[in-house]
Picture 1 (spheres, rainbow, N blue to C red):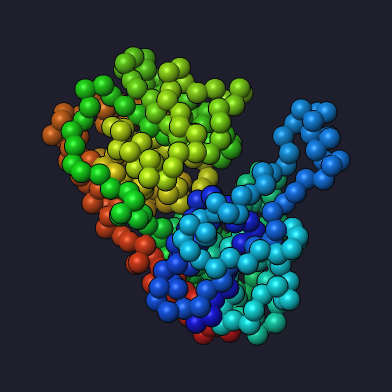
Picture 2: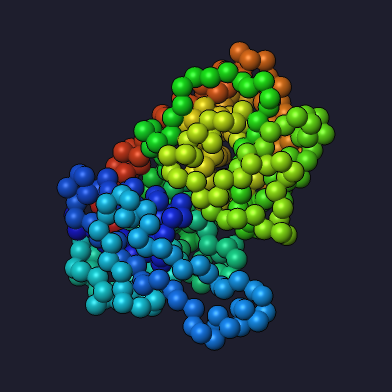
Length: 363
């Protein structure tokens, strides 16, 4: 098949990473794949001046396309001349064209059939992302595109919003060569890890409250973190937290494997890939019940799930993991590893390919 993915930006985000992996695997199976993106957004002189005067950050960062996941995965990337919507003139004729974000669904909605049967790769419910227009987001889910979701939660969202039962599930996976670790024992000094991200929906305030509570019972707790953002004054890290800002991809595995428990406190997320990556490195996951973890965390076996915004529940379950006897912790660690490695990107890519063929059938 000739397949075009239309993305709103090409960067180092988790969403772009997933698309890039699928694009690479589809190419390896003989498909002709192209990713099309607008040129990087550039603030005007007026916007720069206003930002400087008010001391407020610019609306969005300028992506470094040369460091994007598409480049690292060796996927053909076509960048437009300016930052603007993608039009029919910007994309080649194809068998399938894939929207990957609510705005890109709007862009491809009225493209001629020659540009491809329309599919919608749903990686999140952008209705609740800061600054996004909720009603417009939901309207795109009602478009007559074939939907492909990365978690059962998102498949449920598509059904609830649009009434569409015909949704393909292509659950995310991990790269076993990048995320793996040999069997290990629990450390003498308990260590907790998390991803530092300041968006309200990532729930850092809940993470911080949980860590403070844990330290009341385990004052020697070591806390490690990594993230794409530097520490912000209004969302300070826990005292003594070791933050690695934008670590190299091959270093992230070591960070995951340095923890005895991984904490994820998101309020709303399509999947939550870091939690699965941590499990792939034999670290049990304690998470809120959002997106992906509902599909792969088994309470008491490979981690624990608690309600969204339940900082006390997160703390209690994390303490439970940290207090396990060495043999019991090792069993949970091994179970986390088995779960994460039981589903591959090849499996996910085959499912996505079936979804693209379903889009062709509908067209």
